[in-house]
Image 1 (tube, rainbow, N blue to C red):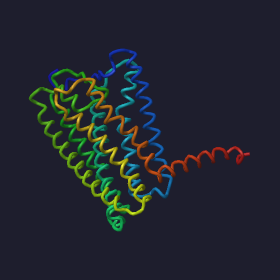
Image 2 (image 1 turned 60 degrees about the horizontal axis):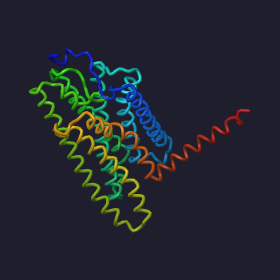
Image 3 (image 1 turned 45 degrees about the vertical axis):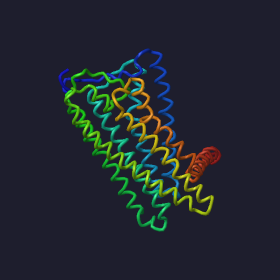
Image 4 (image 1 turned 180 degrees about the vertical axis):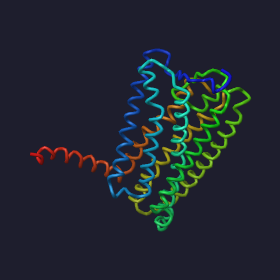
Length: 318
């Protein structure tokens, strides 16, 4: 194949060794996908329905849950369908769309996590100015900026990746269309341009990560000065989950894209991709709901209200 225009489909070769492995992959991914749908769906519904949670912090968390649903829904359903129907093909157009939507989701999520670090920094270190810096309008503008930046990054990455001549076949050792895997198909002298753009994106991500870490250094210093133990517990309960999510997401994503070729292997690439593409959307709701008492209370209140209405519905209808 001389270039990308002659390719009509890609082959996603992960989990194609045996039929038993395909079925195991299907049921495992189905469980992860349902957990992500349930957890993020509950967070979105709880925040949307509870007026007490209509604050900037929970507004950003709602956006994060939407992005988690978008990123996992971009890759997992197609992969499960391939395993269930014993195929490994994805069309060229489908691969382009999948790559764009996935990069858009994870890029926007990362920029949103940076905004959330700023939100926690202002709320804890400058509480008297919180309403000034993070009103409803400012929160919407920050979230919109994160979405717009993610869209621009995805557009540039996708256009640049698929403008490369692909001369090494169409087989990807992955369960979805991933930039590092597609770069392996390009000619040896043609992928340097994409690596340059990828390096710039990684640099921006690294600068955001540095900002997040510096913000949390100041946050923890401020929290330790809070005289009330209950106040310190509340501050840690809203900050530690965010820091855990950021660390898991950044470390695995950067390793997936910057690990040296000598460390690359199909099994390692697969594990790392699962860690940064599937695990965060599935565990984010668990991390946030377990440590955040306010969100946990609103969630149980919502569930109790729904059960109460369901139990009273037959008697009221008679």
